[in-house]
Image (cartoon, rainbow, N blue to C red; front, side, top):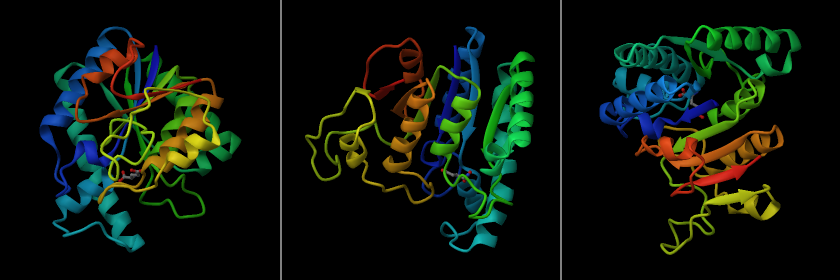
Length: 254
Ligand code: GLU
């Protein structure tokens, strides 16, 4: 199976912006294992800005564009260094691809991306994708990695996109306001009612929230790919998700 996994800043980093070593180590072990089992894995990873904030010792996520882009430049190195080290332990080779929205809208650039990623998969490498935050401006950026991961999943004809987040999935009501809110484990068709369930809040260091995830689900399911939202605090959930089992997560059917 060709699988795209998207991991958010809230999964990879503590609220300080520093790497969550336990979580990230576990994630890389599970992804390596899925590759060893014969699956093709593409990782879309956030965390560049968050980790740059930590590494530069900034006290909070910057609001101005140059500092955000500077933090992303520092954090992207840290991110890839970390992945390279962890995946090398399991004998897997990582490859970095940085994209912007323009890479999907311009036919020749999109084709270049596809040629490269298909070749990388043939070569057995593990592509790790992020938005090219250091140069992306409002006009050309995708803007959030939930949408980016959906565009990537459809572009590479993946069968499954898993978005690892800091929530278990999509709830029938806002779980912050209503503790008894029910987790929806299966969604068939992203209706207006489903869209209305997305509140829109993101974490202190990340970008998305449920709104961008529902948008991603629309792109994915229309493009013929299943999408799952699951809690990144337990990367081992990926085994059940890939096996098609129902669990404590939300699956949107293609
Ligand atoms: N590209 C951003 C980063 O690496 C994250 C965007 C997102 O989380 O949606 O910090």
